Amino acid sequence: MRKHVKAQLLESVEYLVQTSDNLETLLRGLGRNAAVDVLAQMQQLVIQVGNTIEDSEGSTQAVISKLENVCEVLYQLSCSLGQKKRGRHLFQELKGSVAEIKTEIIDNIPVRLEILFVPYQVSMWDSLESVWLAARDEEAVDSFVVPIPFYDVRPDNSLGSMHYEGDRYPDYVPVIPYWDYSIEDRRPDMIFFHNPYDENNKVTRVPESYYAKNMKRYTDLLVYIPYFISEEGGLSNHQCYTNGVLFADRVVVQPGSNYNQYCKIYTEVLKQNKLERVLVPAEKKFLPLGSPKLDKLRNTECRIDDLPTAWKKKIVKADGTRKKIIFYNLSIVPLLVNGEQILKKIDSVFSFFEAKRKDAVLLWRPHPLLIHTITSMVPWMKEAYMQRVRKFKEEGWGIYDDTADSNLALVLSDAYYGDDSSLLTSYRETEKPILLQEFQITELDECPKILSLQQVQRECECSLACFYDAVSMSHSREKKQSDIGLNILRVLLEQIKGA
Image (cartoon, rainbow, N blue to C red; front, side):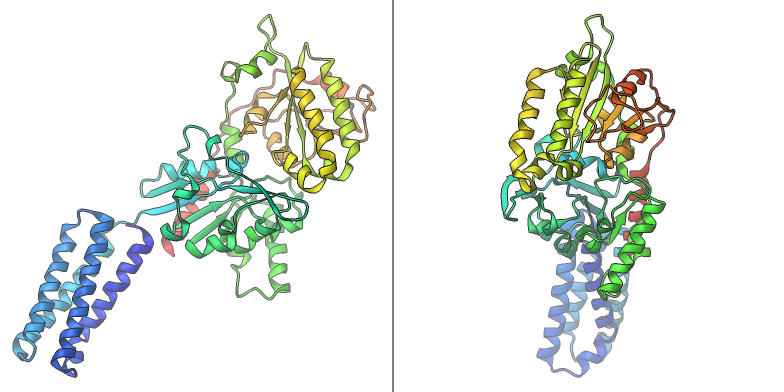
């Protein structure tokens, strides 16, 4: 039985318990017709309780039999009104039966929790997946994955084309179309989401019914898990008080300085806006349990034979050996800030790797929202950028990765080159070398300094040519046990069961 259904059921039964305790005194002060009406209303409530149990549980004969007995006692009471001796016996029988029903419901009708996951961008599903996997395996939990649509946001803040990515999820994820699941009707016990911006998103926007403040009305526990991972101390202050953070009942964050920053900035915002008594306090809201994205990365395995055919053809040489694979990450902010200079940088990077196509593959994965962002915020750059995308794809010497899951590229590649973004934190987990590009450097063969032994370096310290020569294809990593999603679910299940 659903948690909220059992709670409502117990409220009804508690009313019957209290009314039964005082029924004799109550009826004594009423005329016969009024007394019969009270007993009839109690009987109707008993019938409603029985129907609710049968609809939710199916076979619960013990409690149904007790409810049928209560209906019979109430009928006999209505027939024996005015017969003092017989009536007292029936009042005592009614009290005992109703108390037994309450105990039976509490002890013998188990609660099943319904947990809803509402991702919107399939590329961000890894921030929720391991929690869903844990929920899927939980015996007393029904979990549902309902991808929701989103719109492009035009430069004038109006909504453009609608997108829905429900058909892009892995085969092992049973997706339910959003039009077949009503949050208002089903009232899930817990909702997980990863879109924190709502009406403040300037690039893409979900329908208003899926804003955090609206979903919160129909669930006991609204949980926000960020779609990104931040470096220690790399969190922006505004990320600590987005709509998703403000309206969620719980926010799962990374431990350490990020957790401390969330708590500090959020608390300051509450004080400044006098919301201390309105929103959940920081010590209760923020859970420093880590990011499920790391579960996905640590558990992703990559074998060349399992790769898409188009990828395999570009990676494997004629002699059966494979080429060096460099992951190229292009993020949003550098392009918005540096504009045309970034396009020149892209040209120089492509020229560098095209010359090494016999021995290397550039695996280019732009930020999933990059084209949406350009369209919304710098539309005059879109055609120039798209020309480069088309040229890269047509020439075929590299891999353009627009797949739903970034983890395959992270695990497959031998090194990282590109922007300093949230993806960098994930890549550190692979323990493979990282070179952060500098947009103003377009002469990539110059080597300012000798390559150091640090995992992360900047291009102003080591040229791409020097870095490339030093990258090895022999990187191996010990597989780590990762159960962040399971721990998140366990903590939240304890909280919601105790509520």
